Every structure is written in C-alpha cells, then in structure tokens.
Length: 95
Image (tube, rainbow, N blue to C red; front, side):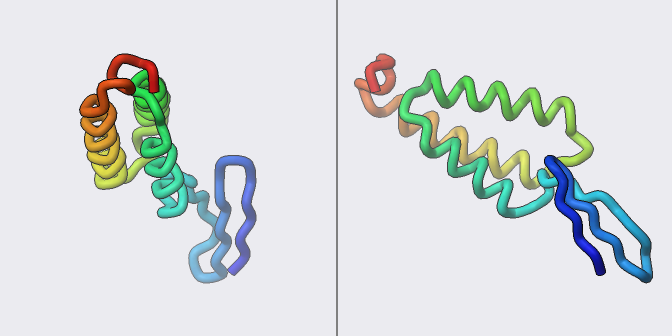
C-alpha cells in the first residue's frame, strides 16, 4: 500500500485494488477539527459565519460528505448556538 497526501486529497494505492482518492471530508480527524472550530466560536455572529461556510462547502462537495457527518456537525452547531444565545452578553454581540 502506498499513501500520498496532497492539498485536499489523500491518494491510496493498493496492489489488489489499484489507486483511489479519498476526500479529507470523510476522515474523522477533519470532522473533529470542524466540530472544535464550531465550539470555539465566541459570538453567534462568528458561529453563523462559520456555518454559512460549512453549508457552502457541503453544497459544493455533497458527494464527498457522509450523511452522518453533516448531521453530526449540524447537531454540534445547534447546541453551541443555544449556548451562545443563553448568554446575554454573547447574544447581544458583546462576547
């Protein structure tokens, strides 16, 4: 097996199956890093801006996402949105 990493893609070559590209969006490390970025947002404005970027990426590369990954990120986002809105200074945009 040979593995090569490029900017946004992992290429895996197996002798028995040949080569195939694997999107980083299917890697658990990417999913966890994205969830971490969601949880680091200090204001609802930052959180909304990040979600708009995630949504745009999802729409453009939907086939590279696993359905449970998108749902996982959505759930993390909703929980953090509720947390930020429950804090008066953050909800007002002063956080």
